[in-house]
Image (cartoon, rainbow, N blue to C red; front, side, top):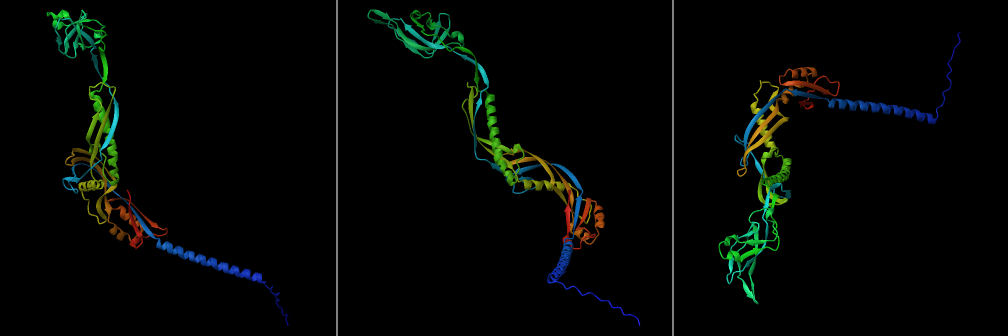
Length: 414
């Protein structure tokens, strides 16, 4: 009879209370991390699914257009019509400027010598009247003329002596220049020659004649006046343009200097042209005005003109209306023939812009739904009005376009 062999297990080691708690915490921690992982996986899946969308970017072919147009502007027009664009006139309050300018003109200066004569009348009981401009001739032949008429009294007797009648008179040289600045001397009256009074009525000077000269002096020239007027007008215009240009913030056009005007209310000068002075003052008071129109209305008109000049292309069910790429729109204009009283003028306009065909978005979305990315890109690039196309699916991993049209976005690029 064979031997029986028995496995004898050693008695299990009894766990302590501390070891049991540690084991339980380990089990709970493992379960927690598994739960978190599953939750994150579910969240990621939801986000991944609901963020699924397609971005279709299309670069259309563009056609450059350059045009020239002439159009009338009137403040009476209420909207764009076949004949006119609606304009408006803005004006400032009266602006004022005062400035001092240097005189730059010159002219020959010729002044006459002047002085005082004492006239003697030695005639007996006979006064001698002399009229204005009576001539007096010096011993050397210089002629002076009386500035006023005078009456020279006759001689008189006083205590046995005879005293000539005398009177003073202001005289001025007959000709300008320094030659008449003569020292005191005796004078005869040529107008009395041949008469008894010629010997009895004479004159003399006690002081030298002075003031006769020839030379140049500074005067205000016509050019000085025009330059001053132009300088102040330009300054007031610049100030007025700055004030009115604030209307640009409201969308009005102020790009042409011809659309500004000024009305002078007052103009004052301290010296007129031809007057002698080293400097003169100029004051002007004026109102500045400008004819203009709304930039939005103007650009809408330009876009219409460009679109009218472009022929419609062949039919294509993916192609929408012709449009102007607004960032490509450019223009220059000049105002001419402005009638400020009537509020009218003519605009000469140069304009340019890029024209493209819009995408029929609803048809493109219908065509794209459910199709593959590569298939849709190939389809788009076969369209004659599309230069380039790109389809992106977000997030990664998708190969087909969503069926939900709300998840399909179309962007035009230029």
